[in-house]
Length: 175
Image (tube, rainbow, N blue to C red; front, side, top):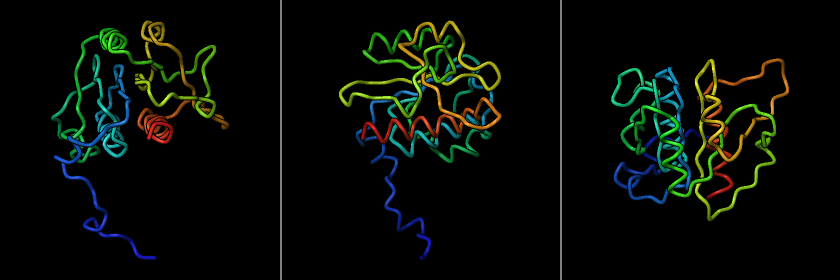
């Protein structure tokens, strides 16, 4: 085996990325405070052709050098929009016909491995603050909650890790 060189990976140019068909998924960040987590969500969203990221509340917006360290330029390729209140972002997505899921441990959560998606629908996932998670007021506005099954002693994952798992699962089911 030989590692591929960057020039052998046939990556899209920024222009090609902007024109590429995206998966019908919007990622909503509800008060995510870490610039590294935000950058990682941009990078993962670029990798899997996520349609857009909604940045809400205290979530920082590009450009920012600390965000760029993990985004590696994805903050310039993936479309994004800022909302002061996450509820406004969720309400906009609802009026645009999106099915909304909070990524949270809730009564009646759907386990990620049991999630069934319809290829003709548009989806949005809300990821919450590193300490408090998705605000209850935002959970109340969602169509459901998705929970990542966990088997160890910890009951949470880093928001950027969670985003990677969720986005990958949606990409696999929608591409």
